[in-house]
Length: 477
Image (cartoon, rainbow, N blue to C red; front, side, top):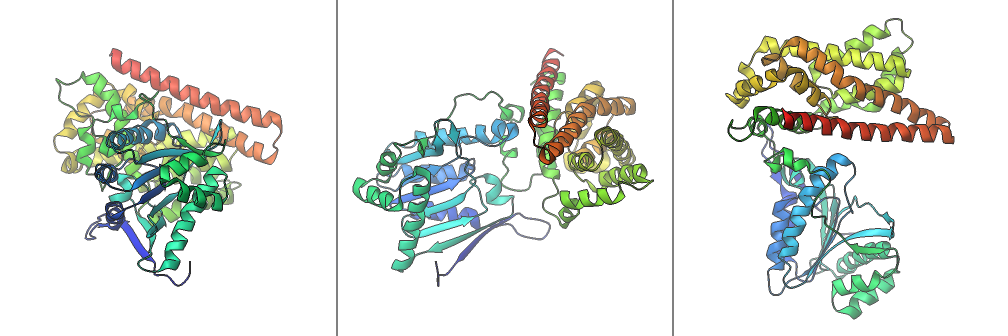
């Protein structure tokens, strides 16, 4: 496109004196409401209830636009599949239930019967009047928590722009179906129905296939968090809401079962919140920057002291500990890296535990009130096990949990032992996996490839067995 006006829609969360900006959300809602013929959306996620509500209002009209959602078959990784895909399934069922006039299609692109094509796009095209592309997903996070920026073009009364917008849509369908753009255009014109045209174009192996929504998921992470809006928040989350998820009333669940579920929920939620994502400090934890720095001190005689000092400093600055372990594994030989990482993690934990103990419960009570006292009692009764549960979740927010433990009644001995036992297997697997992966990239022979794959499979199976065992211990206790 040339010589057109570009609109900008943003999301900015509220922060201190800064007011939130929800232009992304407003544009989605206004565009869906104004649609008359076709709403075409490609997006990586679909979990935002506010977007589902807008689509439902459109579908409930006797006369309204046809809607086509192009989504990936499933999300990447076990964590997202057990949370975001479960939330997506709920919204899909809602909009399908409202499709009484049969104007909705929810599809996923496939290259052939065995190879789905992952969708990472964030695209919306409405009629021949509006096209948008940017960073926003159809998630609550993109509406009010993440920092997003979308660009939008509106045709107004310019026939050139209308032609461009239709061309963009038809090129996307052409790519997904393997048909020419002209064939797509002819099919849409001949069918009289956008959905029927898509069905007619999808006869070959490369096509847009109806997305199957499972009734149940092998692992449903939402069962751990009663308030599932915390998994996809539409704004900054107060710490008190996080504590509410696992400091439950005594009569609702047994104390020990609530402890296991609460520990996992605490780690997942606070781990997401603690990510260095929204501050300038992110420049200092760039993996390439840390790796270059690590190589620079590798041959130094004081490298053990420097590395352990880095772990201690990182604990105070709330740097993600998994990043440090990964960088250590890249820089040093496997056994050395394992020793440095485990020692650094334990020293990091001891330091921040001491900070929490020195601060006491008063600062935390400002956020969580009396709930912190109840949480402390629960952690203390299952000291070593509770720490092991927390350490076996791969996105554990080290500094937050360490200070919380220091301010609670959990015994120092239990805390150190639980940290060592809980962290050692994961550090070992990650360290040797990174070493094998680097070796495979340098020398891609079958021996290295098979060994790397075996380590990855062993890690996945081991994590699953640990999770099952911890859950069983929590239920039997």
